[in-house]
Length: 236
Picture (spheres, one colour):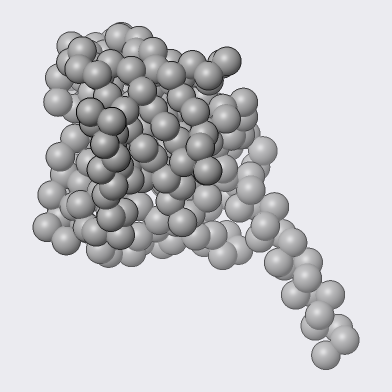
């Protein structure tokens, strides 16, 4: 038993280090059948991940999926919560072997190699968040985040993506993402893709943000120019 314990501790320590190494944003490039340059960005937060593929030149949205993830040794397991290409994958799990280094994730038996964009820094809002309420006309309207209909936003140190979906009906409602900054109470989103309207790619939206009792209060004007005051809660 004394010989097993050190091995267990080392294995656990290795798992923690590898899991922490995954946190952040990663990217890979490919070409479409038409020769268009495509960019895929993966964001890993604690327990949750998302990937989005879009046209580099036009911002045209191509594909996205995401959900939960866990890493056991060199095997990563993802449970799908949404998939824009195949809704029947929602609720299923997929496992695959990975080789993780400081700046690269390689999927074993696959040509896919992800290069690191950031490691979760410097963004102050890094993590997975769920829309949990709004304030309208001075009245707070809270939302049950445990329900199947979710609006989730995942942020690394420099990248963000939001997704609206329903795990019960397997419906996907929309997504958008790009880069972001947080400085002096100002949160700025630079949109790289927006599934509902490709013309929004290239826009920069400025908001005020404040963390109140652990909740992210997000105020400003939406992409349609409407005033918003959203409340986001860390996804457990």
